[in-house]
Length: 323
Image 1: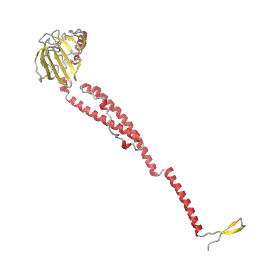
Image 2: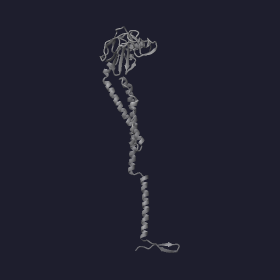
Image 3: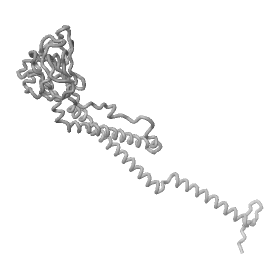
Image 4: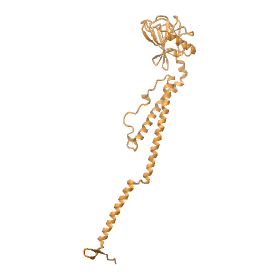
């Protein structure tokens, strides 16, 4: 039998019996359950939002490692870019210059990627700027490596054709001039003998008697044999390949035809006084990709260093031409 409990009532100065029936116990259960659930919720949210779970701690560590790896990758990509820039400089200023290959402009080497945003799928990631920046660097380097690879393919092809190229370069004087006495006027600004004005002379003049033999200065193909009453007069043009061509003007007679293949030293014509000319001589030009250059830079096969210096002195001291 359960004990009967009483509670003192100060108003009546007596003891009242405490009811302990089903409702009392039910209310007690409800009260304890409510506060228990409330405390449980408090502990749950505190655990979820304030205390990291073991899985979250592991993920944070992995994220930190990935960020560190991205930083290392970005630094290594920067180092690769420095090395690649050096390779490109050598390619542009050494290899392509030696073989007279066309320059590859920076607009091609460093061309970007147009169109839609290629990295949109990365923008929702944490630390998206770091990831996108690294991806952009990698894409740019891959593009530059592709361009550089194609450039080296071209250089390798030119290297394999080196012997052919050496035969084609205009490397001797177009007339017999061992004592250099036939050197008249060189490349550069001169006084025109007809108009008496200052004009740019795009070649070098060799004074020689009419009928003096003229030699092809490098292997090539005859592309032009023309006869004009003005300008160059009777003249010949040779395409040597590899961007080189030569012109021989004011001839008296031809010894070749268009399309004929000639070798260095072959007699292609004879000195004359045709066209815009004031005396028998040969006007000789060397062109690279259509641009006239100083022919004296290409007489390295039949001149000693001392003779070369003397030729430059003679050509530069003359202030007028024969054409």
